[in-house]
Image (cartoon, rainbow, N blue to C red; front, side, top):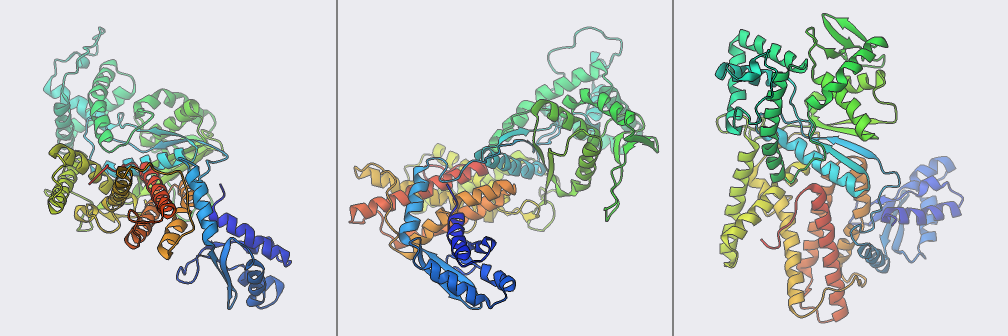
Amino acid sequence: MKTLTDIITDEVTIAFTAHGYDEKYGKVSLSNRPDLCEYQCNGAMAAAKEYKCAPFMISDKIAEELRENKKFESVESVKPGFINIKLSADFIADYIRRMAEDKGRFGCEQTENPKTIVVDYGGPNVAKPLHVGHLRSAIIGESVKRIGKFMGHHMIGDVHLGDWGLQMGLIIMELKERQPGLVYFDENYDGEYPKEPPFTLSELEEIYPAASAKSKEDEKFKEAALLATHELQQGRKGYQALLAHILNVSVPDLKKNYENLNVSFELWNGESDAQPYVPDMVQMMKDRGFAHMSEGALVVDVSEETDTKEIPPCMILKSDGSSLYSTTDLATIVMRIQDCHPDSIIYLADARQSMHFIQVFRCARKTGLVDEHVELKHIGFGTMNGKDGKPFKTRSGGVMRLEYLLNEINEEMLKKITENQKEKENLDISDEEAVQIAKTVALAAVKYGDLSNQAGKDYIFDIERFTSFEGNTGPYILYTIVRMKSILNKYEAGGRSLPAAAFQKPQSASEKNLMLVLARFNAMMANASEETAPHKVCAYIYELANAFNGFYHETKILTEEDEQQQISYISLLMLTKDILETCIDVLGFSAPERM
């Protein structure tokens, strides 16, 4: 189904070409002055230069040509040469009807050229709980994946666990100091290793920070951890058995915490899964002359003549032969190309890691790990800050566990919902249901609070504002949806069935405005997918929620006496609810039945 803008552009283009002007001047856009018109065309301004005449001489002709077109209520030529357009009520009602009939898609066509896209949006280290630093990559990445899937692409989410770096060596050495008699540390042991891990999850989560703190004070301990990391990467069996235990203990807890965020991954691969690809990859880089030794390390030069700043070489192996993040990321690209055959690989990571990705992407292309047809894209996001403008911390100044943050927001949301129920004297909601509603709304508050900001920008994480039922917030969007559900329930309670899509022309400015906003759904979703920009979905649903509430406050829906008119209102309400629910689904949250 063509977008509304494309349909209008086609009509205006016909008028331009009918008068001998180039079709490129017929492009139409949404009006930046909604008080004057709904759509506008500025083509006459540009055409005037080519055809050497005053712009209004062109715009006058085009407006006159279009005035007889039944799709338009009015077309005006405004000096110096703007064309202002308002759509006819019948045309917009018919467009909305066709959207409603297209169940589940609402006029949004899937892409003609579906791609296989891998989205790397996890990155947690095993043996450590998720913390607030993991929030943005998970939330933005999940939405990017869902939007792409809605548009027809084959989306593959990969958690990309951190399970191969120094943190592994630190855990191994701390465990060795605590339990030196374990068979994992006996190099001569050649039997089977125990099936049960030598630690619990809580013990494991305590081991890493203890080892990390010790390494900062004890140089010998740090050197031992570096050696253990190297030996793990070189295939020492006891250490690899410990790694398997660490994964078996950590991953179920990580899955549980991601599920609480309504985030899921198709692949649960770690850096260790890419290690089998490292030796051949490194050898190829050496054999083909891409890699060379520099200060004891193996590197690939990735600078280019057009660079305006220095781009350091991409380090492939450290002087002791150990892998780095760049090694693992390059080997992971090899693995993904082989296993998934992607057209695009998207990475969600802090914007401050941009240099790392420049180096890795250039190295991958220079060495032929990917061809020119595979897109490598880093979506760098800004920091999540507290009200003081600094990176979000606990009251004691530490990094907050994600689980604790979500619990805090759930409690705040439950408090507000309970107060709201008391004010309304709505006592039929049980404590259990209230807790579940609070959890659903709290997740919307967190996700919308993040996603409504452009990914690359820092933002203030303000629990009080995010959990508000007023303003540009997740709870406001959900409250609007719940309001619609309530109206529909009351309509059905009156013994009537929900109607098939039946729309009459809008009876008021607010109703027409709601229809116009609904009609932009397909163009918005395609644009959000193309630009991997979830914030555009948020901006749209906030505008749609406002448009509906404006219509609702001016319209007596349930008491409308004209049956056909009431059916039209209910049809409009149903479509608005369905589109809002579709949008929040691609953002990764849902609405309760009541609040």
